[in-house]
Length: 68
Image (cartoon, rainbow, N blue to C red):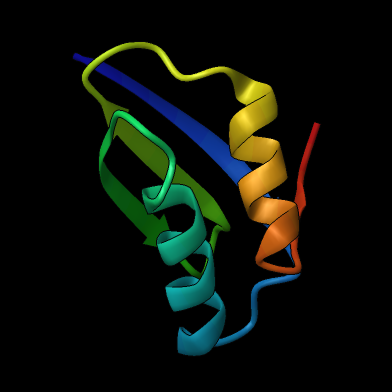
């Protein structure tokens, strides 16, 4: 199992959290997505390591930006 935490900027409400969770959760292999709105932390749990570029693309598809 792999677990990585990313920082997402631009999220301001529960709808933002739901959008990011849905897009990142749709990545093959992702088993859980936990979003902390106040800090922008998005923790992605997966069976195997997930390529950061795939996470970045999913966050951008949701309309937000992956920091760093």
